[in-house]
Image (tube, rainbow, N blue to C red; front, side):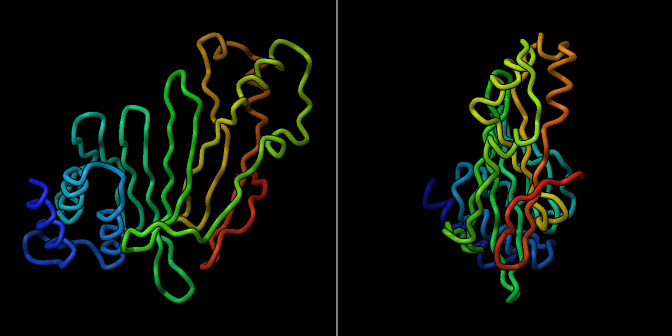
Length: 221
């Protein structure tokens, strides 16, 4: 089975008539990188790649076991990798016209602290050490906030430890957002004082300039 799948992978990368090719060239960069990355099982990634080249593809595409392709366009893919995991792939164009792929892996679920990891890959699926970017710290998120010494204030700080960081792509990958999505309990949902504090949490944005990401800054968007 493994050798058979390897053979199909080779045919896909060569672009033979085995599969219908309807995606534009930029999508092929993304598909090629996705096939070489270690996100799902090889078989699941082959199924998704095949489906992406089918003009009749309807979303979401359910592969079972919590795996679903929920978004796909020329420059991005969103894949639910489990009941609590998600991978967001974004094609980024460099100033010289070449491409790299940004990957956000996020874990979020009931009772789980949101966690996001950002990495970059070549269109051959090779992990890159550059560009690098530092995400906002806990101190930066809390800067300027007047946190009362009340039960709501203490609960607010508790929810931010460890930092429930969520990253997301916007504007076709030119903007990268960082925000906090703490795991709330039922009683938290009805605490108006806590809700007021959470609504004051800032959001940060970083911009892709074709070679690197700018430092995160506060945004009002």
